[in-house]
Length: 341
Image: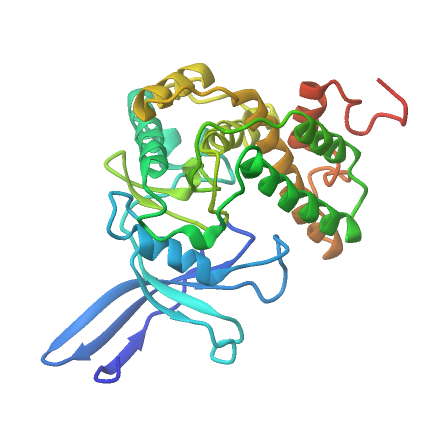
């Protein structure tokens, strides 16, 4: 804004959640013409210290959100993208903040924050608003929106092959500096052996879960965090949604809040909204546990490196993801002696 003057930036605020990027909220005030403007903005910076994922494509995130700006999917408006790392030390983009509330991640929204304080009826409404948003994402025509840059998967089992190849590389990368992952390796083998031809290929959000949604009056007003977006089987998003609701709550032995619809009810409702049968829910829940298990291993390894406190010493290999995979696939429990059952 070369014609702006009297620029003032309020102190930065950093959200409590999030490992894979640096995000800051701030107020910007400036004079432009005869008026004084005050904007609430969000700065997202590419990570410069620790990478959760092997690569971080900041430009792709911006392109997805800008492509969705003309749809019914409520995404933040991206103002500016700066790819020159010399400006702030890393590439970044600025987007408009959306007014609303984000469900808590740690502690879980089942036990903390505005979602836990809501009535069961309101929780039901919030859940269905999220599932409705997910179904609308999958109904978009990704070709018309110009989203082929995400990588068009090959035919037949190609959508699954592409995801499994990526997470195979990701797992190898994590194991280079971390502990061996026999359960995750076994899960990858199972996923490869049980591949199928998806019924359709859609835009997938990639990180579909309540804490990536902004709510106002119990309705979704913002869909956040598109860094894991891909073109593939939309059932993968649904499996991730179901697993992520479980893993940060019941996965740690905590009670599920009243009002949230169950797994089968959620699947049936998604089928009604999408007009499509969900044919491979168990497979995609295993895939979700595998995917998040790699992410957990990476983060736990980082915490160990910086000597941060861990809930358990063997969190890299023994966590709700590996426990769920072992139970689902008939594998030795995490931490069991070699050759145990």
